[in-house]
Amino acid sequence: MLLEHLPPTPVITPTPPTSPEMNPALCFNVSAASHTKIPRPALPDTYDGDWAGSERFLQSCVTYIQLSSEAFASDALKISWVLSYMKLGHASTYALQVFQQPGG
Image 1 (cartoon, rainbow, N blue to C red):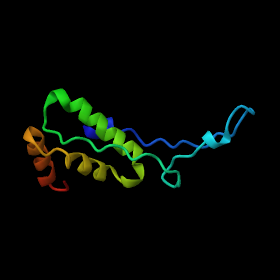
Image 2: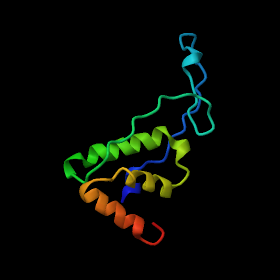
Image 3: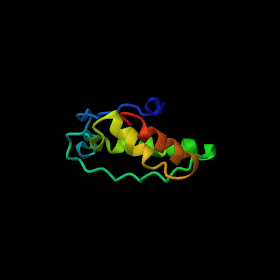
């Protein structure tokens, strides 16, 4: 199941400097409520269902979701977003079947 590969989004809290050598400017907080700007992650390539590219596609999706956690309020939204990149070949057939299921 796709959700098994999508870990919960980590929250990194600020760490106070413990020595004069630490630069407080390097301590930061990345969370949904944070105003910290982070680099925009690359979108995954369109997936065609080829087994050889499946891990690369999945890792790309997981990375994007983790770095853009504020945009994904629910697991259903995460799944729909991933399925939206499954546009070619066997992957498109699978995605269409999922979307056509009741509640899909």
